Length: 115
Length: 111
Image (cartoon, rainbow over all chains, first blue to last red; front, side, top):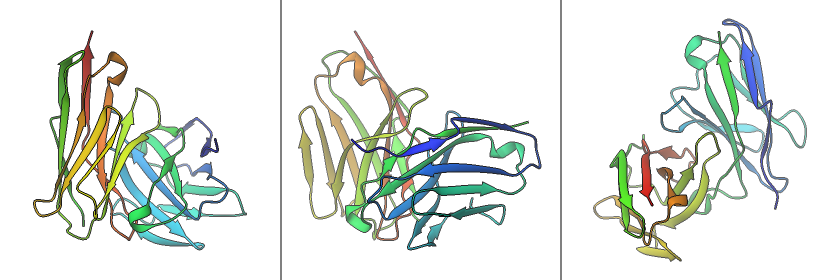
């Protein structure tokens, strides 16, 4: 069964450094998402992406964040200048459709630790 | 934007008993309501979902009900087993795809 994959599984970085988290969505999916989950807390929506542009973003997704689909398979989340509070698990998800048929499949996550 | 409230935050039941988790949402435009199960250190896994044109859906021991008028939906697990122990998240989204999650319920099923 096809799955969403993410790399790396764990990223450790110094405060102020840039990080890029990578995701490979399910191949025939058209909608892509990033979520974050601070340890022990709820999953929080960051951004959705369709047709090579952002379709929705949350209040968390400020100018420090950007997303890109650099080729036909990868979907990346970049954090330009990491802060301590960016430490969290970041999940990528994808879906084949939108709206009320919006069944999203999650990747295994990347644990980001900012020191 | 959408705000999803989930109760209880923790739930402990005896094996074989039923468990019920409740969520409310604020945005009447929301039309898709999935439930995710998350085991420690793992990704959220979709276990059941319901769309706004349906009031109830069942899949073996799991059922979900939706009351659009009251803006609440519930997850029911019958004949609970120890392997049902996990954190369960409800979520709601509309056609804009910004899915919002509840705070989660930690379910413990005691053998």
